Length: 381
Image (cartoon, rainbow, N blue to C red):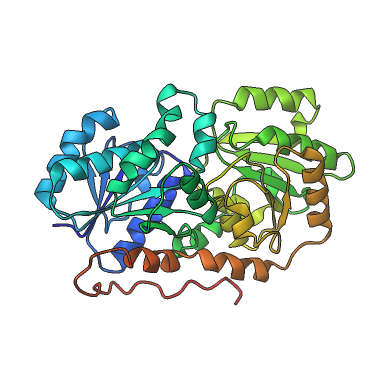
């Protein structure tokens, strides 16, 4: 019988999946028995599952078809906690909880600003999600939002109650810091090369990389630099066309998804988050934990909370390439103290997040020790 079951469709290379893996690993290090229940055992993060985590594969092609299997799993294994992420998965988890009965405490996590996400959703199903939230999410024993902005958005969608909690994402972990130290086999990061501006995320409308590309083109007029966008998605051809149109192809690279973007963050001059909307903004914390400066849009929601309203990095209006270009140039001219950025990033450690999650758990006894790492300290402190 496991103590915690984490339910996901797959391990696609998104921020929510990375967060759930961090949580699973953190719970396991604290001595808890953790099952990672996957509908489909695929995705670039599959190879990163810790040996301490028990992978349970339902081997179904769709979430809906996995419902009977999840109900059976809950009845058979009776985990104390079922934790899920992403809206379709959350809905299936809650339906399974209702059908299985028992006393499994079910916690759903919300990683995006759902009102914005649904408006830009490519399929009709996702456009209807906000209408289901007020009716289905009250079934959950707790709803965890990854930022205050996400919680506010849920309130506006009609979900209210004492079971809504804000817990920031568990970003800073010892494995993250180890990956930042790994080498990069790319000529742009050799000594003496121009500074690299980095963008990381899916190549889709939410991340709004066209604004970053235009801002980069403006700054590049006055100083030598390069732009690298790590990620893959449906906007690739559009972004490549824009790069050619602006005549900056020689200084822009789109290498696709990379298994370790953190080494690139640690060696870049600046990371820019250009999103039109977010739930949190993991990449800001990941870059800051390496001491790398950041610039972000002041989008809903997350970046302003991470950067303390601009204290730890400049915030610019969404879609404003002129303001972004100015912020990039100013940050490169007056580089922030890397240790200050690392100290701020440590607030978003896995240990801090796990302590808050455990307050929602019905655990009967303290966790066993696996000699887990103590509070994560910024490097250089």
